[in-house]
Amino acid sequence: MRIIFMGTPDFAVPALVALHAAGHEIACVYSQPPSRSGRGKKLRPSPVHAKAEELGIAVRTPKSLRGEEAQVEFAALGADVAVVAAYGLILPQPVLDAPTHGCLNIHASVLPRWRGAAPIHRAVMAGDQETGVTIMQMEAGLDTGPMLHIVRTPIAAKTTGELTAELAELGAGAMVEVLAGLGGYAPQPQDDEAATYAPKIDKAEARIGWSRPAGEIVRHVAGLAPFPGAWFELGEERVKLLLAEEVAGAGSPGEVLDADFTIACGTGALRPLRLQRAGKPAMDREDFLRGRAVEVGTRLA
Image (cartoon, rainbow, N blue to C red; front, side, top):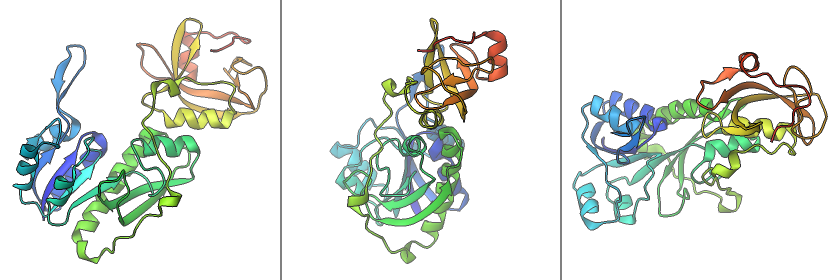
């Protein structure tokens, strides 16, 4: 098939690679414009942009698709279908209608649960037992379109980072499968009454509230790892908590209970497994404590 691929972050790269490897003609890749990052604040292409150039595929990086000129250029590509994976721009109706088979999206949840910007983070933070990817036909609403195919996977103790990598591969395989038998997939409407929403992670959410139950904080930590990273204050220093386990213990919320760095929560306690000091690499608890002793009775904020 002749495809327009639309994606930006690492999550979308496996799908681009899989579609290319499957022999589809990728007419063009659309991605977010290069952004400045690193010490020199140099313009750097998105992961999808970089991979497309490596594969020899033309790339476009419009700031918007709302203008008539951008829409005419998109339609002129004459695509059979557009494949969308975490692109980051709203697709207006003329863009949705331009390809022969419309636009298909790889959404990182089992719809209609977790429509919106941060479905993986929200599923982990909520304590969902499973998640997955949904291949859906895009329409004007926010992740409201009919579903073509769903692949599920257990969440278990995975962090958002681990789950994102897994779902990226599952989504790539699912999209290749759908395109191989596109006419055989009957679109299934979503149950709007069962829908939940996954708003973008706000920076204020990252601070750990020790008065919450230990199990809830452990999920919160996993859901924000590795980015943006849940954090607390140890004295004057901000420390990211990247992985933790729930353990037995009781005390005032935020109180360090023993030499193993067990921390009391609103209910129960947790023990950090992986932490990161500002400007330092992530490290296991033992290495952290060797470099930053924490006395029993210390209160974390």
